[in-house]
Image (cartoon, rainbow, N blue to C red):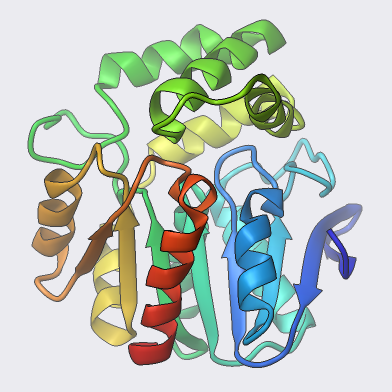
Length: 273
């Protein structure tokens, strides 16, 4: 990725940030253990009309691997520093997966004054609940606990977890060997002992208040995977009747169905944001 720079967010901790294009700022925040490389199609497409800021979060991708701050409170502070350092005004924030937690945490810390619009890609503001049938959750409590206590204890377990998630949840078609290897290598850039911290921090989050605030104060679009479908829609509309939800593909829909995703996002940015 070109036009990359490093921005120091804490002493000894730098985030890799791609800054490309001009116009209204669109800030892209990837999910758990991924880098902004996942957004390659969106960077290419939207940098023609926007200033696109694609961030590798702390301990992910090309950013510094840090033993401190591997939680979404700190990730929110990090994004605040990036936005301030780059002098961004009236930003559109787009978070994917646990990157949505960073968006909501930014709102918790800063309010909506500097936010023009927001896009939430496939994550509930409360990822874990005992009410598996009516709440939009990442999985049953026992399954999530098993992933944390068993898979994310060593590199082999982390690799197995990512492989299963990539093939069963992230995409709808069969991945090629090269594609699967790319996803695994992206995820394993973050060591298992940091990945487990981020996993737990994300699962125990509750940003329902911030999600409601965001929906009611700025144009906000939620794009959920087809396997959530009506569960995601009904959950978000319980948070706020004004919630707008689109349904597309699997968890990695913006990569697998990039043209359709970009079309949905472009329509939102043109007509609503």
